[in-house]
Length: 286
Image 1 (cartoon, rainbow, N blue to C red):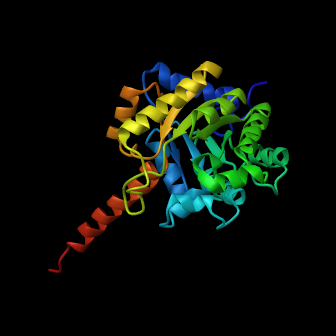
Image 2 (image 1 turned 60 degrees about the vertical axis):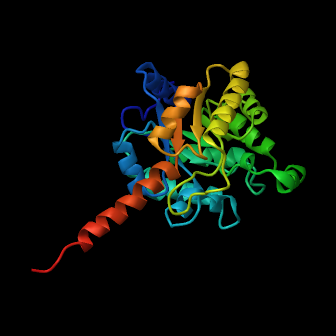
Image 3 (image 1 turned 30 degrees about the vertical axis):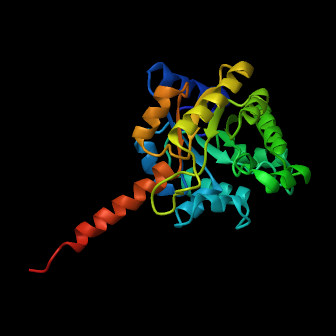
């Protein structure tokens, strides 16, 4: 059945989002997705030509001057925050760009089928698994896995979202996680190689090298290709920060594009505000 909203913006069906992204690739252009934590970010990222927006709870922390990793901590209800940003800040101001909701799939308090129904009714065109346990490792990750708050819950959320005709775009940190998501029918896989470098709150020592990022990104892509070759492959995080960095990834992997949150939203604000304020402060009295 055709989408009754087609032509006037969100929401889009799963196939409509896929068709938009494929059209970008058919023009030999990279797919660019962006995180948006505020309405003004969303409005002007859309004007810049991004292919889609993702609303994360981390966007609120990021645009409040805190590290994006705050979105993984118990500083609020991640699902409620993402829905609030979407309902009151982003969806009312964008014109036609698809908007994806970051869903904390392992939240044990949610009946996920019911919550995803709310996400769809709000006008989101798809879902992303954020906050995600795929970027947690070590002892704490093991505890999460053994106490019912596992990455598998995120996989189940994506499988359910696919059945509900929502576009699904997922973060993964390892090839085996990527294959799980591909088997669940994920439309797009984002190789997450770590917290983004640079700016006032980017990491320095807690990231990988560009060579590592290339290797890890391609390993994730290779794992997905065997399960679902029609997947869109995207890169994110770590040393992949600037357009020049993304160029390196595109030249050295089979990635179709890039998803930037800090790289677009936060970096776009930090230096421009510094520079503009300095210009004002350089004014002298007659």
